[in-house]
Image 1 (cartoon, rainbow, N blue to C red):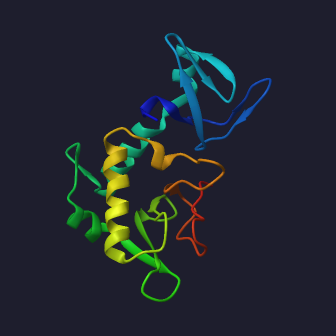
Image 2 (image 1 turned 45 degrees about the vertical axis):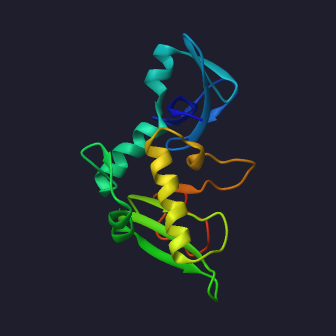
Length: 168
């Protein structure tokens, strides 16, 4: 998946067939002159008025959070230093989640592991997802097979349950 495949609605609106919610991420299939979102086709002008590319929004927000400096990635050490790390479970191999926010009720990102592991291994996995997204690969931001994405965005506050960040 690339930059063009995930979009955000700029405002809530309805069509004859669908309701689009502000802040919700939708899959998009672009072609030469049109964009298909939720099985509806929008002209380039309609699309520009109603949607924005999710990756562009993510990069702007990451710049504000300090995850991007002057348009470039930060180091893994800086990534770890900026993170608020929550651990779920007990024992040596826990689920380590890396949260980034200025105010969790405004904008927050959570980098989730794919499996239980050490904190160092979880950091490596989170940093790889971070660099892949900055390089334009949006798979980590996408809901696949009804599973929550590995990188979640929300404004619901610090989650009590695992993988429960959402957009209000």
